[in-house]
Image (cartoon, rainbow, N blue to C red; front, side, top):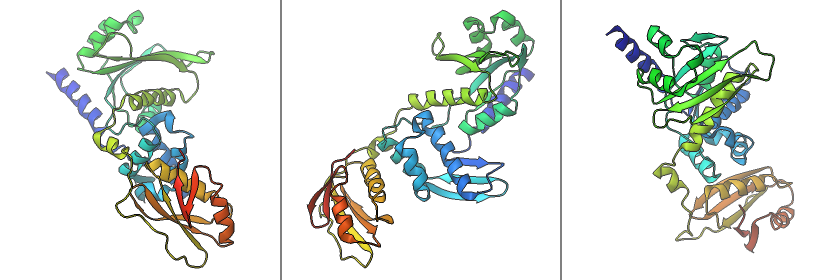
Length: 333
């Protein structure tokens, strides 16, 4: 009876780890600079959602350059807390063709033997890595029954691991052998199992550096991101835009402004890529989306210098074709 209560409590604590939204980030301690804290929090959210696929992608560059679009709220004390706009980030990653997962990750039962000793609770590096990727972890009791099932040489025996994990009603379990005293680059090995199949889902070597646990959590996070199936709402975001019932027209510009209308913006990514190219033009200080309908968008460029020079430069933008006075069509990707 007592053991059953302990096992139930372990799962409750594991479930509490998933209570926070994947779009919420807490940094404590936090960078002194608020701008640096925002970017660090954004990178963590993108890593949770899409793993390594998001790093150095144009989606990450876009989110970092237009962070106000994706940051929903923020607060400080203690540390720094941020909540990001899930719909905007989902649209961005979907348009970039990147796999991503917004659902809570499944709990992992962790069988860890470190330097010859078993572990029944998370150390600081495990807690930090699990919090970064919101990976709920369950640690075994390592009572007499566990020791009898998983003794010494049987730590990586598939049948023994399965038998030991069944009493915890685990769907996934992670087996790790780690030796911090080794002088080699590889300090151990790990395997990820599921109750749904006998062979390991993933396996690899554990690096010997101080970021070994964080690196392992990153690999698992990548796996969950690749396995995620887009929801119907995300698939709807990828539907192509069509021509609007009433076409947008250019408006009269004030001094220092240049307004253009662009057609052919089939996906959200088209709008993002176009904005990036417009902002990169020499002589353009900023770019604003005045409005957008269907596959058309009206953009206002802040042009302190020659408007004629910018109009000429627009004709050379890759994927942008002049269609009339301050009207263009987009065929880029």
